[in-house]
Length: 114
Image 1 (cartoon, rainbow, N blue to C red):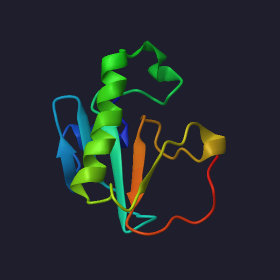
Image 2 (image 1 turned 45 degrees about the vertical axis):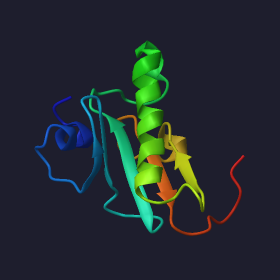
Image 3 (image 1 turned 180 degrees about the vertical axis):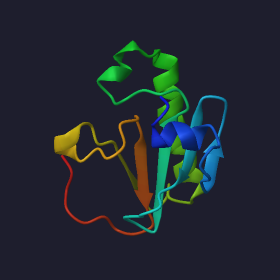
């Protein structure tokens, strides 16, 4: 998509603080972190959100999840714990319409997520 912020980051048109990259996935630090570690994990291919990901292969979606786990390990979050979150749609406060996972850690998380 021509106007997608995350597509531009994936294409290298907008700089980012990269944490992980392979041929299909990119992970970079959030510019407005909500925790000491806040990394966004995106597919390089444009997918608007989880609902639209139904057309993606299981392998592509598994790569996204594995990349989130790799980021947690790289950021030394595995032992203390971390949170992986994905906001889907306006009521969930999805601010960029490109599928992405937030990997959050580095402190105890407040509240409960069910």
